[in-house]
Length: 639
Image (tube, rainbow, N blue to C red; front, side, top):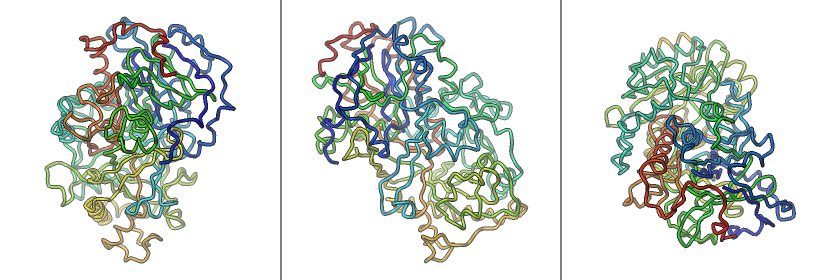
């Protein structure tokens, strides 16, 4: 592999600059790994240098075996891991127990946009401060009529991690997988090999459960890299809330087993009470120890390099320290940039809906439904319950309790359509401005005197899409059109869930906390009577929020599926050689639970696909010397 600066780079001369959908990172088997949850922000567009600021003084060429000697000391110490799944997939190439990649002289380069994971991220209570910080790409949805009406400019924030570990460094660390029927449904959609029976071993593989004595061992692992445990501290309100749900008829059991509808004290991605990100689990332990793993941080991949005549991927172009470079792959490129940025990277590279790409004068290499099938777990801010006493450690308190229920709209046995968690809040903040109730606030980190029961829609019918930014297709934010509540059934389920949650005020457990429902209408809905269906509908479409679980924009599916982008038996992009997508964007249908663990499972499965193809049986491939490194100038014909 070679890293080659592109002379006289001009960011203003892109053929993609015509008017007009967690960052392009790519990762490769003999050369490239591009990990990053998201990559661009409109707020950073002005930082993109033009040709007058791009450095062209050096043209470096060096073999992969000497890659580290050409990096500065600080660069050698940096690992790239933007989203939760890349860290799982990337290292698996490198440190598999068998001789694997080192024996076959297969090398991996990880390219990441973010910086090192800060120590502050280790503190669970600081989670609200991680989002909308410099660790976040700060994406936001486009204004739409049925959601986010009371948010600034009618846009909802969709946080994505811009840091080692990606979104696993800024999320709420919840460990939930989804139910068996979720994965069996994937298989029924034509995704052979993705049933619950098939994927359970991959969940177990990466799990190191520190509370295994409390669970059925056939569902859990203790030998994996990812540490899972309960919070070491639970205040009394945690158990009051858990008891309240049990009073309402929900049984308490392990919701990562073979059933879901019920309640539980959740486990989290923690180690000794500190956040345990994908970076901490999979990258830190092998940094400097794996001779075939190379890392490049603060590098923004701008496009995939694909030979148009053969539709063969041979590398990536990226922007680093004011200059464009390219990294050439002798084997393949894996894109793991997340649900919002993987489709963006594919589209700017000519893979996506032909009509959209033609509008941007992007040459179409393959007309696929890239960016379609976007869906997420939608939630809303409210209702709010005041407590009679204050309690400490807001961000680590009642969010430890999870409940799954079935509303009257869900008829299939043990398939929850609503989820409830409880955020801790300060009631005074809610009185002053409901929009700020969930925002970072030093006072709210010190104590809380209220609960926000958060209704979460688990099985949305609505589907959105992602488009490229018309003004800045490469460096601008992807345009996110979630179409939240486009299907009215989604809104009616949310309202039904909210009404169910109000029953907790009548339980003895909540009465013992001095719980009182706040009945002051939110400003956007004060023209409606509090507590009516119309009021709750208004609350949902006005104070909409994401639960940070977008999926589906590079959908996995069989060849006969017109919306499929990747093959379920390899995660290779249809019609493009030597290119895979391995992240949450391939998930065809969101699981009915949080998606952090699911994304890691997808990565584990994808890593096995890659090992199967490269060190297992030979695959039909026109490449001959597939394990050789170095740079072939014939590969660089497009430049």
